[in-house]
Amino acid sequence: ALAERTVSEAVAEAERIRTDVNEHAQRVRTEASDAIAEAEQSASRTRADAREDANRIRSDAATQADTLITEARSEAERLTTETAAETDRLRTETLAEAERVTTEAADEAERVRAEAGARAEQLVS
View 1 (cartoon, rainbow, N blue to C red):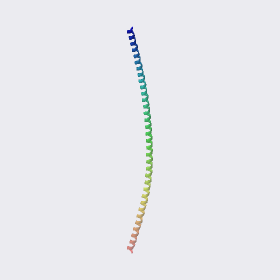
View 2 (tube, one colour; view 1 turned 90 degrees about the vertical axis):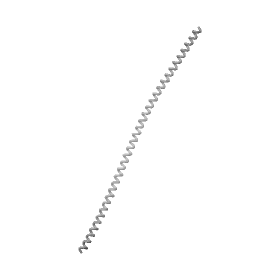
View 3 (cartoon, helix red, strand yellow; view 1 turned 120 degrees about the horizontal axis):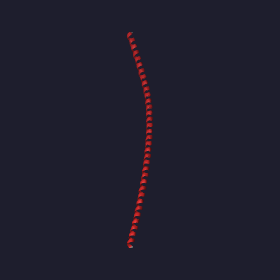
View 4 (cartoon, rainbow, N blue to C red; view 1 turned 135 degrees about the vertical axis):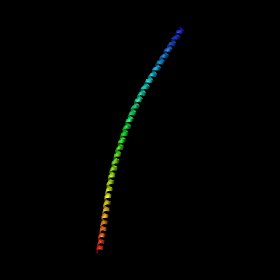
């Protein structure tokens, strides 16, 4: 009877241990499953955040490029306008100088002609 009770207690103890092990294994499986689900959610959030960041960076880069292009066009227009104004100014100055030189040359030619005429008259007389 004592041996039967000891065997019975041993079987009951083994059953409790088996139950404890099964419960522990189930808890570990549940925790692992929860951890995997959490990791997948975290990875999904990270991918979504990365896509959002990439889109924002792309958009910012496009905006900056547009701004730089606009600034470059404005600068090119400003330089073109300045160059045209400077060209007009130089053309006007050049024409004025050419007219001055032409007038001086004509005056000098007239003076030389007058002197030559006066000398010719002196020689004739």
